[in-house]
Length: 278
Image 1: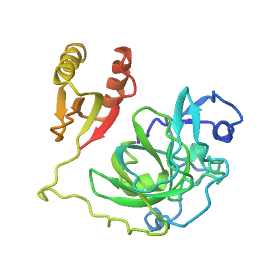
Image 2: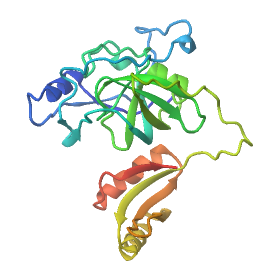
Image 3: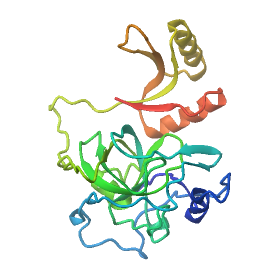
């Protein structure tokens, strides 16, 4: 079984950063090459029977919601609320290596609970997470910070990842939609996409630039085609008055290849490419 590589810093260090005691967080990285179920934290008899998180109106965590914080030299700005939040990206997961440790909200991490980590949503928040490849959905409580890994949108608990069917691959292409506890929406029923239903599989791209000038977009496209030897496209906007020409690498066959391309782009001076899934 292959698991995700999730750069999850020491959670006590994150707590210090989130409290604002230290201006620049310099916690060490703990990379989980092998994570999941261990004999020290055996799974319950029926993981499938574990219910989704129930959206509840709770006060914000005292320490988990600074206006901004820094991890590994990158600043993250915490959202004031989760209303209307919806994003597509790459999900990873974390398991027994962090089971029982304090999360950024102060709650102990339970790998068998329906929880998740997010870099900017308020703690706690609730969200529906949908695997775009099989249409499975779950509802999770976001009570931790992370994942602090390029190209990742959300870090799921072991159970949430298991229900979405991304344990073996380690990552998945997902859509994250916040749920207002005062107006909870039921999760989409688990209904895997079947061949012939007319819905194509999602495609992964890395957006490396957006220009008002088609000539500038074309110049970057040609440069990257020469240096990356990868497929590069220019995505036009529908706004004829204020056109935007987005330069994107892809479609990319796998998350691992996207990670490799991100590193190569960094060497070319293009950092933090934006993940696009469509």
